Image (cartoon, rainbow, N blue to C red; front, side):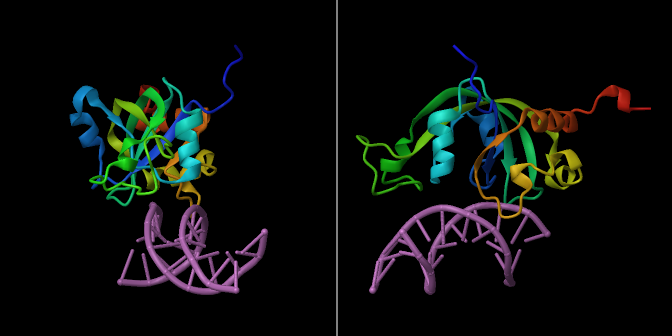
Length: 166
DNA sequence: GCCAACGTTGGC
DNA sequence: GCCAACGTTGGC
C-alpha cells in the first residue's frame, strides 16, 4: 500500500473556558472525543483524513495567553459525532439524525504538555512559521493541517536544546 | 470592546 | 445561482 500523502500533523483549537488541556489531563486515560466541530472543511479532515497515530497540537484560542499548550495523538479515527442528535448537548444540531450522520469527531490522547506553553507571540516572531495557517489573518479553521517542518520547529520552541545554552 | 474575515441563510 | 444580511470566530 502506498504511503498516505495527507498530513500526519494537525492543530486543534479550543477555547480553554470550554475545554482546556487541564480538562484533557484530568480525563480518563487522558483521552477525549473531539466533538462539536460544526464546519464542513474541518469535518472533512476529521471524517476522511485524520488517522490513528497522527500528531495534534492543542491551541488555546480566546485565551490569555494565546498559545499552543501541548501535543496529543489520535487514538481513534473519524466516527459520527453523537452530540449532534443529543438535545441536551450545546452542540445539538436539530437537522441531524443518527441514521445519517453529518458531523464527525476523532479521539485524542494527551502526549506532552508544553511547560511553558508556546505563545502565539513567539510563533509570530519566527519567519519560518509565517505561512502557518494559524497565523494567517482571518483564519478561523478549528481543525487544520500542520506541515512536518512546522511541527518540528514548534517542538523545538517547546523544548530548547542544551547546545543553545552557554 | 472593536472589527475584519469568513460561513450560512434566504429572498429573488 | 446570485448576493445582501446576518451571525460567529477570534485576534488585537
